[in-house]
Each structure stands twice: as structure tokens, then as C-alpha cells.
Length: 296
Ligand SMILES: [Zn+2]
Image 1 (cartoon, rainbow, N blue to C red):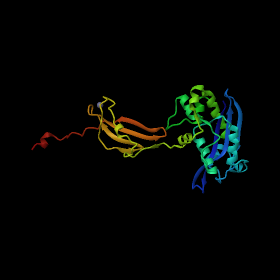
Image 2: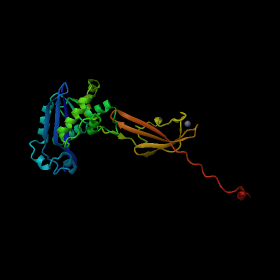
Image 3: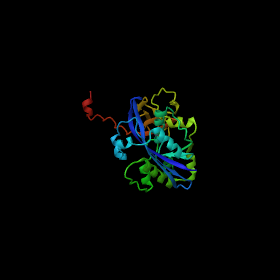
């Protein structure tokens, strides 16, 4: 079994044809690793841009590549991809998060009109594997490659972000965190349609209370103090992608902010509930007037 870790560099280029920005890939960098997790081969190719007319200043600063340098590259996207497919062979492909894979699909779709990467048979998202082993990361906060390297005390002082050096850095993280089990569970079969449906599925928040995906029977709260079922005091409001309402406990009379987040993911509907106690309202100030003044 061999593995290939791929890293890509791309530039947001405006396509007149598609009337939108395309993440145009300009560099492929990869390392091939054997069963003993030693590097046995390296791959580094520059791609001549055909959509973009200049390099984003941010990308230029990060990579230290100039647009002129790219213009003299020998490969276009298709020939670079064909070379990479040869390099990959039947190895398991790995990238740090699925964004590189999505960029690869976006470019292939732009240049050839097809979505599936026919040369790809098995894939592993190295980022989610490392997050799992380290017990960090979540859907809202993902583990960056350099953060992961720092956590593992790997020297990240490479001069600039280039595809090959980032692939090598990913390799060092992989080498430190590799365990046969559960690694094998993170390797996905990439040869069928299902893989692409899952990969391109966009999770979204459901914010329409009338949507059939919102199960109203689940939108209740029990008092965190005494476990009594709370009574809803206000209508549901949509706030920052969640449904929000005020609840009150009939026993201890405490008031709570109840939040329900409904997210449609590839795996199905995910319900998240959160209840936060509201600060006790100050009682209306009592009348300070003397009783005599109110006397009739
Ligand atoms: Zn209570």
C-alpha cells in the first residue's frame, strides 16, 4: 500500500465564460510514501494560467511566485493532471481538508466538462484524520496545517507556502499521527458517484419554521435546574441561523433563552439545542410615596 499527499496552489481568477471566479490551479506538489511511511518520490509541477490575467497580491505574497514565472510553465491544467494521475497510480490519495480535492474537481469541470476524477480510487481527508487523533477541531473550527504542525512540535519555518513544501509538512504530521487503526476507517472508496455527491454536498441551516425538515415536536426544553418541562413564553424568532424563544420553568419560575439549530447535512438533519438562563429581571421599583399622600 502506498500513499500520495497532494497539495495545490490556486488563484481566484475571473472567468468571463462562467461569469464567476474560478480557483485556477497553478501548482501541484505531492509526495509518495511507502508502507513504512518513508518518502519514495516527489512531484512538483507549475501550470500555465489560462483564465487569470494576473496573480492575486495575497497569493503572490504567500507563494513568492510571479505571474511571469507561471506564464513560462510547460504544462497546462490537463497535461499537469495527466502527469499527476501517472504519479498517483493506485496509491491512496490524501489532501489536507477536502478543499484541494474540490479545487481539482472545479478545474477539471472547467477545462473538460466532467466532474469525476477517473484516476481516483481511494481517498483520505488528512485533516479530519489528524483532528480525530488529536481530539481537536469541529464543524465550525477546523485544524489548520501549520497549527497541527505546531501542536506536534514540527518545525514550520519554511520560507514560503509552496505546494511541495506544504505536502511535505502534511507528510510530517501524518507520519507522527499514523496508526493503522483507525486510519483505515478514514480511507474512502472514491470510485463511485456517492463519493462525489457527499463531497459536493453543501450543509445548510434551516431557518424556515414551516419547513417539513423542522420537527416541531423536538423543540422543547426541560429546566436545567429542576428538570421540569418548560413553558414557551414567546414566539420563535430566527437569530444567527437558529430558532430562539424565551421559556419559563413552571416550578422554579426561572426564565431561559432556548435555541434550536437545525442543520441539513449529507448524513441527514442535525438538531442542536441550547438553553441559557436569563438574568433575573429587577422587580418594578415599589412606590416610595408616603401612604398619607395616597390617602383619600
Ligand atoms: Zn425549574
